[in-house]
Image (cartoon, one colour):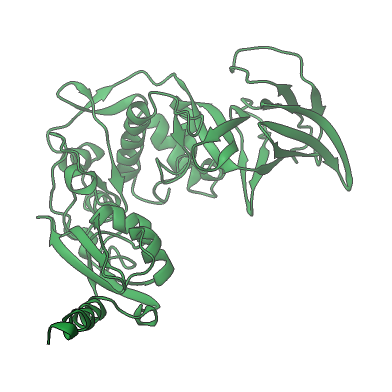
Length: 412
């Protein structure tokens, strides 16, 4: 009997291992979710604020509701800010089609008031191509099929004529990255090589602007057709956000703020030039000049979200850091399908590859919601791979990585 004991133990071990491991082909192709709300859910609910404005509330009452204990103050807003409009690029294009417009190109990184001799002045329909070349940018000019080398340097500055000619026809510059082209009217554009920790050298492109009007004119967080009180509330929240989150230049993007949802969406000239409604947004910027949100006499870090699951989220629940000025309040309008037709309820399907990457696992065969926050959002979610290995994520991190609308979700 003793001689068969090792064989018996080996068989039992194999059976035990098999009971915890799942065949590779058992990993589902996707997982399905249902939920409500869109975004991180912290701070000002834009759907909720619109509903309050439609009900006759003022911008002050909207902001005091979603930021309990806050006040409206006045702050200087004459600063210039670098807004990132092209992140981690290897190539990009610039051109102007404005009649009578031209672009001055400078080698190096110039401040807005700094003067220098341009290395080139280009006319309409001439395209500048930025191409990463080692630790530098190779700049070429193209007219039709003719390409001419201009210069190679670590950074370039672009200024275009009529930038601040606000009374006449606008002179615009178009910036193309990938398949996206956005037109800009204000400030100057700079391109610089920055070293990313993972990808190595990349090109960062920024638009340097006055906060007071040029930047805020292009912030595109809510439709300009919304009620004036909500436009005012959004401008005040956006101005406050820019002053707090954009106080320092970030090395990773060579910017004070990203022009994307990483911070707040900056759409350039298209926002202020929107037919009929663009003027309403600009009027809200001018009407609320200098107004900011304060808490205990200091500028408050303001967050805003498209909608919630019926109650706003706290900073601590979303990102793990408790703050005294982040409180949860009811937000019934977000759960009203007439006011929030797209995201009062939603369903989503996430591919296996996306989930595996989110949890840093080879695959995901099982998901389990471990617990929820008092606001109803998922606090922690666990994934299990076919080998039995598990990984746990915060609900907000999972939402972001899995690209589902919100952390108010259920597993199907």
